[in-house]
Structures are given as structure tokens and as C-alpha cells.
Length: 92
Image (cartoon, rainbow, N blue to C red):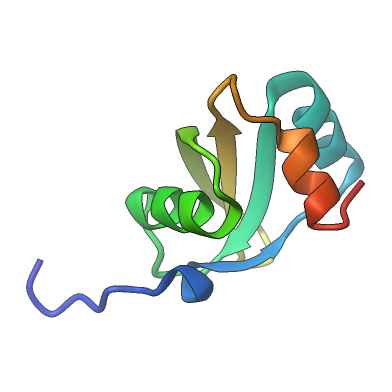
């Protein structure tokens, strides 16, 4: 892709999202939710999460919120715990 800027991992993830729903997803589906850069792709998010948190990502889904934010729903491989990552981030 000519002319596209490659984002650094630190530029992709803006901050983790912690709501009641996010808490349930962490515990029941081994998923984390992050607010990400509007220019970030699924591939960017996968790479950033794996680099920053030393985990393996199973799947990434992205949605745009009504507030104009981009949310990434990141499923981790079964051998990694979203709860452990959330504790390291101070979310739980």
C-alpha cells in the first residue's frame, strides 16, 4: 500500500476500555477491549497487542462507536488469560 504510514505499536493502542460489559468479556470470552487509533487496521492491532502485552491474539474485531472512537475487541489464544493482562493494566 503506497503512501500509507506504518503505525508504531505505541501509536496503535490509545488506552484499554473498562466497562461492566468489558469486564464480562474478559471473564467469559477471554477478550480485551481497546480504544485504538482511527488509522489502525486489524493487523496493526494484532501486532501491537502481541508486542506490548506478550500474548498471542486469536482474533480482532473492530467497530466505530457513536462517539467517533474506534474500538478493538481482541480475543486471546486459550493459553493466555485476558484476566492476567487486565490485572497487569490495573483494570481488575
